[in-house]
Structures are given as structure tokens and as C-alpha cells.
Image (cartoon, helix red, strand yellow):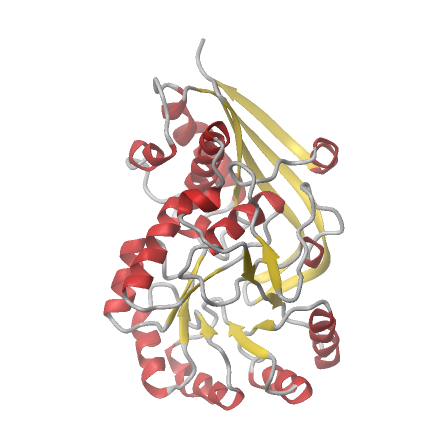
Length: 370
């Protein structure tokens, strides 16, 4: 394909409830969308960076800058582009995986739409529906937390993930377990909030029969994850530490994890995410698909990834209504804790023009040179 231009578009969607984690509180989703226009059609991708470099070193203003100045120009000047060629073409630019993922996804979507193939089929997905769970943020009080969890269980979710942080861990987890019983599949996510001195404290979570504890320590601190596995019976899941298939292989070889959460934006795109999946499957490590409060564009693509056979645990691909009163695509719904995988060409969805216009706060068209 010949890339004729790229549109960068920021949309702002209010969250139905504030989402609080160990690194901050989100009230709205300020999402960056990428639209790749080619001589055969167009495709969409979503950058999962957030406004500030608190979850990772990437942030949305920085993603806009690196896309505009460094990532888009070499692809616009190329005689032709392919999705599989995006990574090698941009390899001289270090890092910025979330920005690269959004651009690669838009080109991959355009490529697959032109060929009439779904993203799920391209990645080797076999499932028509995938199991999903819901992520519950930190609340001000235990009654608020219990009310929120109760609502999600009534909505049909069977796996609940609780965000935890120092000062909000053992007590809320115990409250949820005691109130709802052992039949609820329960896991926790620390988003790197703990340090080596907290090992014994975190081991006390063993009492609650958790599916896993996700990324308790800094992304570069694999040693503490290894040590936690040695003293705890709760499976350890890595998130922020896994930035590539190579990083996954290293973590597995060092016995730093039992499970891996794959976030396509964090690893540089869906093609690399599929490679992470393959590495984990080869080593018998279960994987699941993480979420970054995506709009319907990113949610559709995540469902395609989660259709791959190694995704045996419920992912954070909640219904659109979990986060937004109105999404920019057709809403995704949960049926008995599962969600349908899009079957249309590419990611299988296209933003609704009216919803997109309403949500747009800024956009820029970057054409190929005449």
C-alpha cells in the first residue's frame, strides 16, 4: 500500500465514575486516535498513553510529538508500507512503543480491510467469544467498594480485579472476599506500588485465595518478583515489566512470573503482542489481555488478540458502559462474563462520525509530500 496521509485526533470521553489506581485518578479518557489513509482505504489505531508519564514514561502530548516529527514522516515517504514492515522501518527511534503501536495498528487495520481479513484471523485467533473481567479502582470507603463490586457481579462479570496500594490492600481484599465468598474469581493489581520491604506484607494476601497478584514491584525489579514467588503461594503476574517478547522470555527464564498480562500498546503493537503470546505458550505460561481504558477502537482490537488460544484467563476488556456513557463506536456488551470477538475486516469497527465529532478536541492531518 501507499500511505497518502495520517490523521491524529484526540477525543475526550468522560468516565461514568472516576478510576483511581496507585498512580492517580482519571476522570476522563483523553484518547489519541490515529487514522492511516492509503491508496486502498483507511485504518484506525488507538494510542493507550495517558496524560502524564505516571503509568509509563510515555504520555499523550509526547506521543503526538514523536508521531508527527519522527514516526509518520518515514512511512509517508516510503514507496509502499506493510504492517509487518512498520517495526523495522521505525527501529532507529528508541522506545515510544505506545505511539508506534497506534501507527502500526492503523496501517494493519487498513491492510486487513483491503484484504477482507479480520484482525483475529490475522493473529491466529480461534475463539468467537472471550472471557472478560472488570477492574475496580481504589475507593474512599469499604461500603463504596462493596457496592461497586456487587453491581459488576449483577452485570454478569465473574472475575473481579481490585486495584491495591500501600494502605489499601489487605482490608479491602478481605472485605470483598468475606462479603461475596470464595466463588468469585478475585485478583489484585498493584501497578508497581510496592518495594522490597513489602515482601512479607504482600505474602499475607495468600489468605484470600487470589487468582494472581499483578505487578507489585517496579518494572525493572524482577528480583523482588522472584523473591515474592519464593515466599508466597499467590501466582505472580507481570504487566509493566513485559515490554517485548524478549522481555517476556527473560522474565520466564528468571522465574519472575507465573502469568503474563499482555497489553499491545505497552509492547509496541499487536504483532509483537502475538509474539509475546507465542513465547508464553511455548513455556506453559498463561496470558490474558490487559486494558488501558480504551475506546471502542482499542477494545475491538484487544478482543481480536484475546481470541488467540493462549489467552486462557479473563482479560480487562470490560463492556463500554463500564467506562463511558457513550463510546465512539458501537458499544461492546458483556454476556455471561464473555464478549464477542469482532468478525468484520480489520479491527471490525469504525468510529461513528457523529460521536467522533462530538468527542473530538483536536485533530491534525499530515499528508504525504506532493
